[in-house]
Length: 306
Image (tube, rainbow, N blue to C red):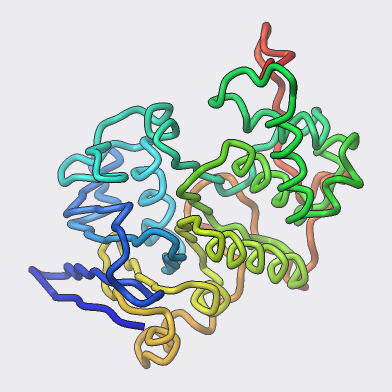
């Protein structure tokens, strides 16, 4: 792994490089963004680059700004200053639907499923930006890809999403994003509240997606697992990017180890997800401990032509 980086200004770390060997195409270029919620400054002078096909682990404590960073990339929270470029296009103040059309998709913390719809119906929602598939061939191919990654979703295709466990719901949320054929996938706390077996399976899928050329930005409090999956890592603390290095280096960094590598998958960084079960149990949507609140389609959107 190789990387170059420099400290520029108080509390600012900027870095470029690739855990996969360097020299790749930069597909996400964030330069000095500041994001506020009213008078509260959530991100301050954050700069970061992501190379095509890499997994970037974004780690930090509860409230560090990880979710805000992903929301800014996705067009859900416009920076007060600085720039964001996706595939060399300035998307700093573009609305979320325009950013999505450029191939970026966010899987939010808390999963945000339509819990009264079936697994297949939830997956189908991910195709909405791609237009009509007149003979269904392309849609079937997308289902086959998702089922190959998460075979249990084929078994539970006709089951309501609200009846699944938390880990299975997370698979649906990721699968729904993949149905839209993104080139950049943003994952916000995908291991939150899940049993270890599901965490391992989901991170294995992340690694497989990257091997196939997808770029992934992974926000996690489970820092050790995230860095083991990633090519590169950055650390956010109180809205400031404090470290940027190849993931293997961060795993052996004394400061990072002392502050972050003892963390489990629990806790929150904003958003709607619940706390992890203290015993590591996977929440079961059927009894309400792992599911988000039911989400119903607006009137007139009870069917989707793709």
